[in-house]
Image 1 (cartoon, helix red, strand yellow):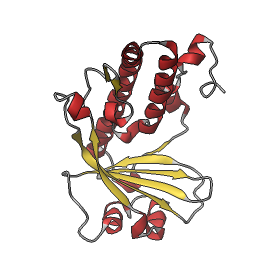
Image 2 (cartoon, rainbow, N blue to C red):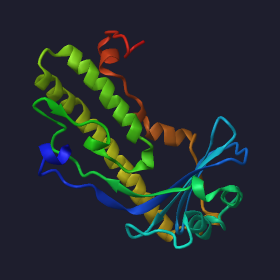
Image 3 (cartoon, rainbow, N blue to C red):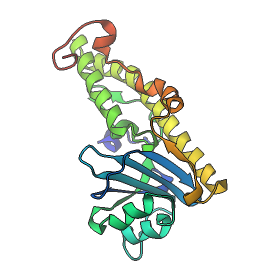
Length: 232
């Protein structure tokens, strides 16, 4: 759809790294965090049901796959890292592992034309370093609903949506891209993964730096108007 209506729009580009994601049944892991080291990154997040979410990131050429399967590739890269990464990888199953090369969409000049608008990844597909892809799609949808309610003309509503959403989503995409670049540089010159720094996800300094990303209110809330389905 994007290519049909915006034929000059750029294609998604490879970010330079691939990501493995899986949920491990063993645990419990009581604290989450992210470790940067030579060869990549590993993140851990405990889930409410006692399982653990785990991801690994590594710089690789696009399209590569583990010759002996993706779980074996994960273990080869990260099983020597610090506790509890080896135990989680040992308990993992091949069927649980997903691997995807990470792509991002270069900035578009507009998210709307006439009576057509782009939302979510179709408009601003970004790297996952801030965990904001799905969140920004939800913000898009709430904003679009509010503006369609405010404007009698659909093209004007969509133009307002573009004006409202494009600066914010492209700012977040830039931040996510920079975090990925910093992590890659740190990994090139930093310690090996088993000695690498674990970055707690609840560090107040980290949360403060995310204020421009997290401090968002839907248009109805900002204007003080309540709408069913948006404010309650």
